[in-house]
Length: 238
Ligand SMILES: Nc1ncnc2c1ncn2[C@@H]1O[C@H](COP(=O)(O)OP(=O)(O)OP(=O)(O)O)[C@@H](O)[C@H]1O
Image 1: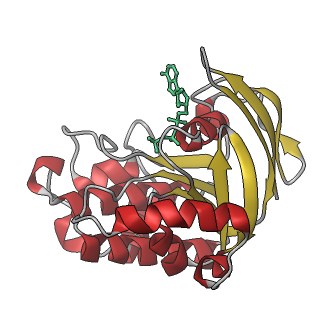
Image 2: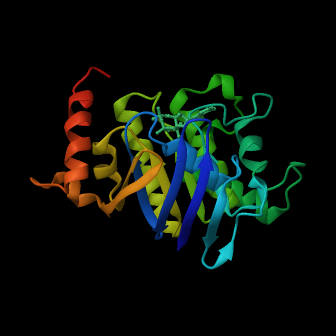
């Protein structure tokens, strides 16, 4: 269980997040500027918050980002351009890139899981956007950190590929028992991956429900307000 009680002040924006997150998929929904990324950055250790943050009873707040049991995938810039696909994954296990046999097998396993075996000698500039994000997922997989944070990593991809990535994330979350948090602007992405949804407004967690509430005729009021707005925006061309 990920236990969050975190405060952070931007100049004019005061965030105060209180929520407990169980293993599995959780999608963070909310309008632009309501505080979704701030929460992910606090969890990842990229912003220094006050309060409490613990995972299965162990406090994480004093740990620097690289010592937290967390992998983060950003929208882009997840790869090292001078390293091959294989090396970009291997660096998740060893910064020196000297891997023992067991570690090499893990890299091959992650490349298999993300269907990149035939791309392992390529450099990032020779990959499509979807392939590049699969490499980033493969690296997160070999690190075997129990918490995975996804800050809209697939928003630049076309809808079909985005769906494929979300299925992959969901698969590995279930298979490895991860606690995965995904920021999305699209409620249907939450429905696609299942699990739970959190609604963020004004720097607070204002609702935390099973994803099925999104499909209900009468969703809880806060969600129906949000869905009213986002249903219109999802009608816009992609
Ligand atoms: N670098 C910054 N400097 C000052 N204020 C910031 C900064 N980043 C965010 N904020 C403030 O924090 C609020 C929440 O920002 P955040 O990026 O967490 O929202 P978000 O829900 O992820 O938005 P979006 O969906 O547009 O990415 C913003 O409305 C803004 O007031």
